[in-house]
Amino acid sequence: MQIVSEKAVKAAVSRADAFTAVESVFAAMATGQAWNFPVVREAIGHADALYGFKSGFDRDHMALGVKSGGYWPGNAARGLTNHQSTVLLFDPDTGQPRALVGGNYLTAVRTAAASAVSIQHLARPDAKTLGIVGAGHQAPFQLRAAVEQRPIERVVAWNRSPERLESLREAAQAMGLPFEAVDRDTLCEQADVIITITSCFEPLLTREQIRPGTHIACMGTDTAGKQEIDPAILASAEVFTDDPTQAATIGECQHAVAQGHIHRDAIRPVGGVIGEPGSFRRSAEAITVFDGTGVGLQDLAVARVALERAVEAGTAVRIDL
Ligand code: NAD
Image 1 (cartoon, rainbow, N blue to C red):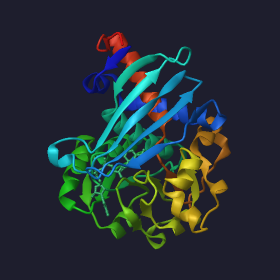
Image 2 (cartoon, rainbow, N blue to C red):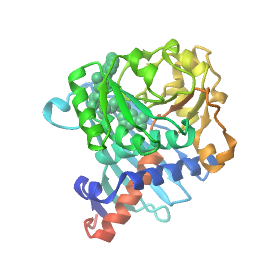
Image 3 (spheres, rainbow, N blue to C red):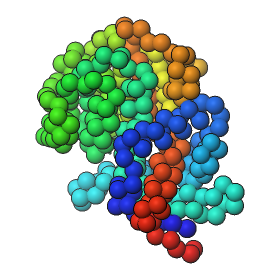
Image 4 (cartoon, helix red, strand yellow):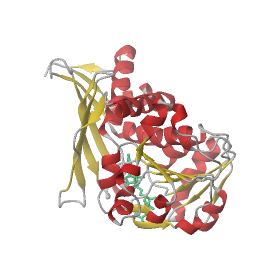
């Protein structure tokens, strides 16, 4: 089997690679060619950590495997990424392990690629201002991928701890875009596209704050109990997701479904729009929401690309198990 280190993965997988891989696997999920297996996610009662497995099989790209890891909130204080992930790919023909791939950078680029795919397929074509709620590890990745999807001219952002916004300011400026730290009312007044990427357990944005025509990518809620937006927003929006089952149970839609604001059948897979571009035509006034719950197949999709590129580049290490 091959081992692909975090360093080799970073050199191998670009934002464009991640976008293509994630877009393609979302489309495969919508046709039933790829499916995710039930997620295991447990609070382990140590270090406040959430640990689990996300796995699946993509028949279109012959990717079978599992991402293992989770969220250790104390890691940042140790100079480590809070999310820790490793991907194990298997040969679908034999079940033999094919590769062990570092998953930390991959998690960030595949999560950013998911919201970027949603912006590409669902946001207004003339979106000019990007708003970001949250400024943790994932946020700069989100910013960089999102601004490539629309003619974005400026970035506004809010974070509970404003000092953490500096990483977003640097990311925006590196992309040649002006950046402003704002309050949440101003963010919603100005942003055409909003990405939420926090670990919050209560709504940060209300229905009253959201303007017609806004696209919101809710990327932080990936566990039961978490929440970033008012369920009433979902009730008045066209709602899309990576995986409707996950959206209704562990994603942003969980509260809206549980409280009867939306029916789970109203949550559409974005892959359907990717596969059939004419199947959704947004009006200028529509509010669109993408509930990005994070699926194992996204991880397998980018890990597969990392493996192929690293083998080509000679940066993968072969071992006999
Ligand atoms: P991080 O720990 O680096 O940052 C957490 C962010 O959440 C910070 O901006 C912090 O200020 C904010 N936050 C935490 N509690 C809050 C509260 N009560 N109110 C307002 N803001 C609050 O985490 P990260 O790596 O940037 O990840 C952010 C979130 O995204 C995590 O919850 C993670 O589980 C989730 N995530 C989702 C996916 C997916 O595919 N959907 C993938 C990766 C991460």
